[in-house]
Image 1 (spheres, rainbow over the protein chains, first blue to last red):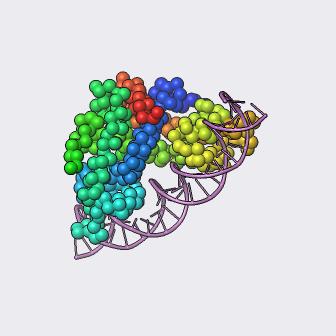
Image 2 (spheres, rainbow over the protein chains, first blue to last red):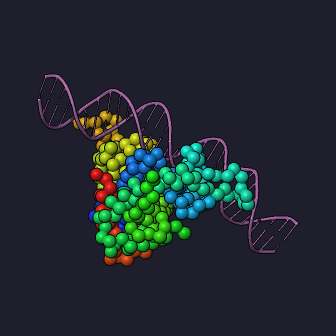
Image 3 (spheres, each protein chain N blue to C red):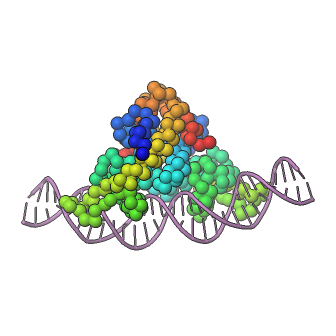
Length: 153
Length: 153
DNA sequence: GTCGGCATGTCAAAATGTTGACATGAAGGA
DNA sequence: TCCTTCATGTCAACATTTTGACATGCCGAC
């Protein structure tokens, strides 16, 4: 006969909206949406902005490294990079010096664009965390990290 | 002359990986990935599972309602529903009784499949929150909610 | 040295998602 | 009553992303 034992919930919840996964998705979607709207005025998409930000911090990063840093596939990152190159915001050598990795660098225009867009994005992030008590912010960051850590291995 | 005032960060951070947006993205990606792998064994995608879960809780929900509940467009939800209907997991009348909304319902097979998949998903969520102290879980949920609330209006 | 493992870049195809547009039905006000 | 407004379902076009595959170049074990 069929097992009718109810599946134990991961934690007490009255409905799906109280599950961690749901909240995570909801918050991510809201952030993504807000960033999309804000970045459109700067002629950037969210993945493009992410790439620029990452490149500003780690110049010379490869396409594969960029992909890992923005949590997409190498192929997706490649498309993003092509867009950025066509817009003159990054440079990428056509041949590698040493290995196969092609180091990507921001152009002055890229840095310019990033700095302009950064203000809008930071404003959103600030608005987002305005509602969480300051003393809980550190814990929140740590918990998000712990959850991600627990999943990918 | 150009404004060289550095953009104030939303909160003290040494690099991008300490920004809330980055952590949110990282955790979401990890969860999405884990769910993808687990649900594949049950012949479901993440959006499909989300729909089933939502329908189990609110039977008779419309396509548009489903779209709102899973944070995608009506068009995307429609594609998901077609897949679920072709798999015999849901029913949807071809004509509306009253308005234009077509109420969607789980079939017995759909309920069956959902219950089977739910175990795998709950296990993932449990593993995910294992690393966060129990007394912080409530606060975490509240903070995620507050952040989403602060963004979409 | 050579071989196998591994990471990288890239191509092609498919799945997934969005934007834009339009028709239909309900509800409410002039 | 008629008309505006709004939500819904759906079509088409497009953009984005992933999956799968393959060639190329390092690197360490043997």
